[in-house]
Image (cartoon, rainbow, N blue to C red):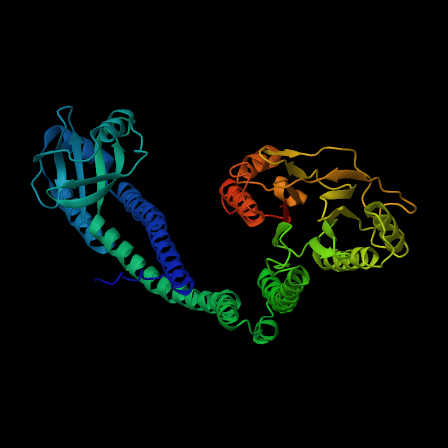
Length: 527
């Protein structure tokens, strides 16, 4: 299996160095190009003007009338020889490339009166800008631009002045040529010297700039990166970040902010660890509370194996949190059994503790030997609970007392769910009647009672609201209709079988979604 090649990183230090180097090179090129252009124009102007100085001196020294004569006769004389020697001497002394006198024609040729390299009357094509030369010859004015050209005589620039006779007529043109190689050599020397000087200056600038950027930007950033990496690896705060960066700018603010953030993160982690430990401790305690709560409820079935008059079974499935559901059953005397199921308001440890108190009070009052009815028992329990109920908790209770020898019973419903009753040979139906308020809601409450009678084969099913309010993934409630359907799958089954059908039905409906309320059920079958 080939390893993925790690992408090569281009660090900010390298980027800064390359950026400074590129900027320096661009600045060097810009300086050289602009300097060479400016210098080229300046040196051309200087040499061109020097050519005009030489040309003006020549015009002062030569005889214009003789030039006019030569332009008409094209014959040499003694003066011509003197003039030729003079012009040759001036050419040598002034470092001019060529000095010549000629008459231009409209066919773009020039006929030389004097040229050091040819005889009088020699005709040569004009390689310089003809319009400028022809304008100088016909109008008698100096050309405005530089007469630069490439010709068989080389790369030249010409200074051109008209020669006029005594009447002011232009009879010829005087040319002083300067070799452009001389200008180019001067320019190249200038550019070379400028490059050397610029390299030295810009190199020094580059080094100083790099040192400044490295000290005030790169080094602090590298220190910040190192600190962040070390903190991410070990969550250890290093004071080097706070003590080493003193740039008096945004980087120092950033370093201080990161240092403060690291302190906050460490404090946050410590708090999270403490909170997590506390939650684990509370969770463990809640698990213990849940187990204790479950252990307080009757767990062994059948609870009265020597009694054949009835069959009883109960379950309590706790929710995610410790709740307040409970059930109980106990004999008050040899023939009377009490059935209790309740649901305390609220969740958590307070509800569980309140449930313990309620369950204990109900059993204590029922077994006091005073032959109390269900309503009277709840009345006494309500009075006791209201004495110190600062948490404002209350409990819904269904309490029934049945004479197992006759099947006659009496029940009190304090705000609890309607029980379901199945008569022998029939199906389960809800026994709906008016409820009394929940226990511990108000002082001095009286609880209504109703009598009932069970016959052989009758069944009783009581439950908490966790059954009918069980929810699925679509937040739909289980409801009483599904409850009755589950009970009537086998309405003649024993108590355990009845509860098993309901539990399976709830499990299929909820799809094992976590429930937020206890699911508590009690079934009683009278034989």
